[in-house]
Image (cartoon, rainbow, N blue to C red; front, top):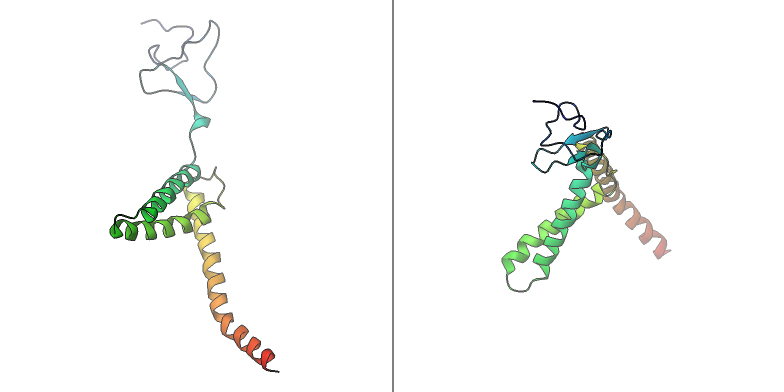
Length: 140
């Protein structure tokens, strides 16, 4: 079978995009596995962090709808923890660059949770001291 001169090397003509004579496929373009004959640029694939942020927004909306509905207490009980967990994840993932891959996203997520845990711990330890300090100055 003869290779069409407009078909990129290694791609069968049934999957190759329709290119004008003399044109070649864009660098970094991968052949679409479907029979559409289109090429999908590798740069259009969304990184993990961007996909996860989009999923979190969807889960936040679902949790909100489950809380707002007034028909079922069971759905409310499902929606409330769903909303709380997805809100905390969104706080962390909102500070992760959308271009981050899975490994970098998880490392930054753990770092964010570590910072929040440290602030929480310091706050709990410092609260009694601050309360005592305000009681002593208010009484004088």
